[in-house]
Length: 402
Image (tube, rainbow, N blue to C red; front, side, top):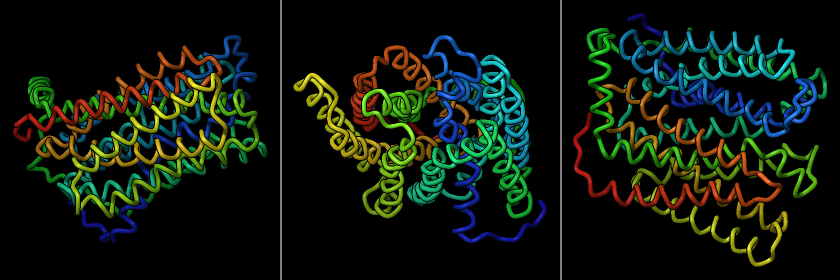
């Protein structure tokens, strides 16, 4: 194994946060351009433009299914670098699109590519940390993962105002290039050759079976899927919702960043609290908060017969995203903590399964968007209720680690 300069915690967190943030950046920076893209791609059915988000995630699902086994067989680093290269190619295809179909093809390629860095980098983290220590590092990384996309819509709008929507994809090319060079120079391989698993169908299917049979892993995975489904649904309708209900257009990136700030705050708080209270207890409280806040907004909407004021929506919305931040770091870490022997494949199964669930939920809810916040609240409330039930149930399982 080639020796590389050792990284401090700060550099490690920033690098892996940057790599992981490409998945969210690939969505969030494009949100201000949704209405512009609708016109540029000659989209006649307004709800179809939401596919720009869901097709990116669908591409990631397919990529996640193969990235894990490849990372276990050939090492983590080569999969991260290959994924960044594919993401780079998808950005070029998208930037040159002349219609929605070509744009969606580019988005699928982007999503497929970003899955390599997403999966293999998490396996790299699992190679070096475990338990609550891993949850702490993951919280730091997810904090960077959130802070970058927080400002992404503002950057995307700024780039679009200067050079059109294509400039957003140029930004993607630059980010992917920086991540590629930084990781190439500073991060060594974390999976020793003697610990690599042969790439065979029988081995993969056997290990997938072991992961799926682990009730705790699947409970945490499904919980992530339902919570993330609410987030993806929000991303798909966010710009339309702020414009249709509150008349917010040019200031959309500011309000988006304020809500996303709730996730950033909770991820920072989680990095400080998880070593004292543990992942499970924090997740239970966060699920409870998600249920209470979503129900409160539902009650206000039902009683008044109209959308809540912008102040109430933002206050409760920040609280909802605050709860989601705790759940992202802890549910993913609890699932990954059980699959240390096959961390790459485990990351694939956990991420792809949760993504399939979340995309399905977001797609269905997106079809019912009717210029109200009801579909949005339905996603978050469902995620809270289902997630709470699965967490309570998981505590009764006694599965061994995979």
